[in-house]
Structure formats: structure tokens, C-alpha cells
Length: 445
Image 1 (cartoon, rainbow, N blue to C red):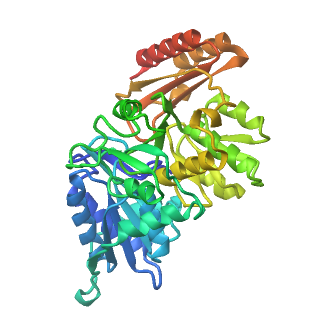
Image 2 (cartoon, rainbow, N blue to C red):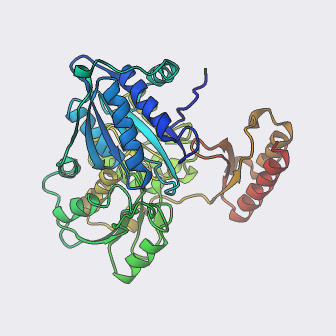
Image 3 (cartoon, rainbow, N blue to C red):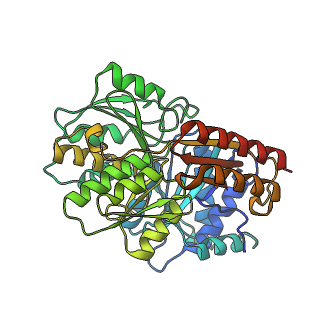
């Protein structure tokens, strides 16, 4: 049974278009309050990123939750992983993040966390959607939920981030450029690294409600790349709008993606004697990562694209480390969801422990060329059942042979078909991707 509203990462869309409207958020808050109540756990935390529509949806959710009889703690701007952490440490019944992650300000959405800080189970999401069909009712006046603002939320999360690395870690002598995407990390990430001793040059820390992810952050790192070179910094760090993913930039201004970050963290842990031999990636993880990990006795398991599926595999198999090339890195022994600041600290720990630069730590990994094309989707259609596309894809896979692979999939968060081709020969990879993308466009209804 498919869900009507929940996708792979909560609910997301264009503000003002269903379901991202104030009236829906009111009903959703009420339905979630009905579904998420726990005995002795009748408080829900609400955090948000910095987009202007967050104020509107925060108020609507607050009203709906109150009508269902739940108290509310308003966290203000707070990274998604910060909401997950505070939900479990404050013994709340649930946490809600108002965010559209790396999207621009015209979009918004919601992410939910259960009382344990993990994403909601499918059964709970179905339950919430079921309650949405019921007439909205209000509890007795004496049972209405109360709202309060948690003024020390940012400080609590800053201290948590610092606690994920040994107290002996001192970043003195390191110059870092930190790009906060004018998003939820703007008042948190620079403080974390500064308090650990680094010299921090902050970028994109003046959100105005409209500039989140605008020519900044992990999806548009050109300003960060330029700043790292200009300031002769040791490292650049860029987060997305809600702080659950990151990319890095080396001294030469070159980007370091999630696959490379995962390699650094995994191999450093291996050198430090960690017992784990399995790292979880996705269908998009570079083949070079898989081969490089194998040189260290580590096996890469692939799951569907989406940090939700990485987390499911980690929990099911008792594993602790996984990530995506986009920069979602999950260190399950540190936090219950992807955490950009925590992942950055793990890389800095590896640099401090070994005395090596990013380039040194990555010397054992060589990425295969990848080329990805996003094809805008006009109407939903089943790629697996589209014979013309499948015929072209099979022929192209034969051209690549054993030294390449093709991944064709719909995006879980945007109306796009993602065409990804990987192989040793960049020219061939690019040509194959372009030919397949054209085949998808021709076959699209």
C-alpha cells in the first residue's frame, strides 16, 4: 500500500500547493498528535530551518498538536540531527523538523522522529495518514497542550556534537572555512569548531528567510572553494540547509564528496582497531569506494538510494557506519540520523590522529568517473515496464562491459528521473548517460 503524503524523507513540496499549506499542517499536527501519544510522553519538539515559511507552518503544527492534547517545545532554527538528539534526550514523544533540506526557500516540508530519535516506522506513518481522514476534534479545554520555547536548545546540541569526539581533540592550528548555507547550522557549526580550538572563517551565516541554499552550502560550493584557496585554509566544510549532510573542500579548492568522507571515517576507524567490517552505501556509491574499502578488509553493502534505507540496514544488521555520495553520513554510534557536524568532526579526528591532510587520507581511493543527468519528470511512469528505455539501457550496458554500471531511478524527493553512469572511461560514460537520458525523454508520457 502506497502512502499518500509521506515519501522516503518525510513530506516535501512547494509552499502554497497541497499538501504544503497551513490548513494541511494544522490537520497533520493534530493527526500526528493523535498517533504519537505515549504514556508519560506527551510532548513534541518542533525545530525548523531558516526559510520564511517555517514560521507559518510552526504555528499551524503547534495549534494541531495542542488540539490533540500534546505539549509543544519550540526549538527555533535547529539542524535535523539536533532535533533527533533532543527528542530522545528530553524524553519527548516525537520530534518534528520543518525543512526542505537542500531545496530552495519556495519549498518546505516535514521530517518526523519517534521518541527514540529514529525516523518514524512505516506503520506509524500509515497511522497518521489514516487519522487525517477523521473529523478534527479538540480535547477538553483543560487538556489542551501548552507550548514553550526551549531557549538553550542550540547550546545543548553544540555540547552534544563536541561530546562525539575525545576530549583530547584540539583543533588549534587548523584554519577552517565553514559554509552554513544560510540554514539551520548558522548559529551552531561555527561555535562547535571554534570551541574545539580551530580558527573558523564562517560563510553564509546571515539567513533572511529567502537565501537558504542560495549559491551556498553543500549543493553550491563554489564560494566555499574560492574562500578556502583565498584564505589558504586547511579545510572547507559545507552543510545543507538542515545540517544533515555535508561536503568538504581540500586546500586546492577541490570538493570531497560523501563517498570520500565515508572512506576516510571507515578506514580511520579500522586503523584504530574497530571490529566493524561492513560499511553501508547505496546504488549510487562509487565503485572506487567499494574497491578501496576492500583493500582495508572492509565490505561495502549497497542499498536503495536514501538515508532511510541506509539506516534500516544499519539497524537490521547491527552496523554503525553508512553514507551516500551526496554527503549524508550516518555514524550510528554517535547519532540516530545523518549528522553533518558529527561527520565533519570524525574527519577532523582522523586528521588529528594521523597528522595527515585530506589528500593524504584519500590517497588509497581512486573514484571511477561518474556522470549523472537529471531528467525533469512531467508525469509518473514505470521505468521498469518501459520497453524502449529498457532496450536502450541493456545495449548501453553491453558497451560499458564489466568496468561500468548504469543506474536509472526516480528521485525520492523531486520530480526527476536520475540517470547515472559509471565506468573507467569518462568519454564513454558521458556519451552513454546522454544517450540514455534522451531515451528517457522520448519515452516519457
